[in-house]
Amino acid sequence: MGGAVERLTNLVRAKNRFAIPYSELREAQAEAMNERFVERRDRIKLLAFRSRESGIHEIRSREDMVPLLFPHTAYKSYPESFLSEQRWDRLGK
Image (cartoon, rainbow, N blue to C red; front, side, top):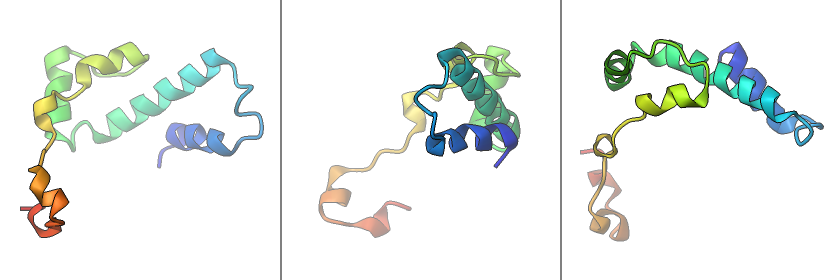
């Protein structure tokens, strides 16, 4: 885990977590998003494609993330019967 992501996730246990100023929290979130983005952009083909397509190469705010979101068709869906009948073996096929 990178430094910005670790700092952000450590805030969960911080005693003053509810007193952190909004602007400070948003800045920490943007840093963590950018860290993950840079780290994984070239490893996730769809993310690299969305980055090139939108022209976004760095995340400075939540608004920068929106064009990078995957379309709903990128997520795998399963027939309900696989779940209701507990056919876990079929989920990976």
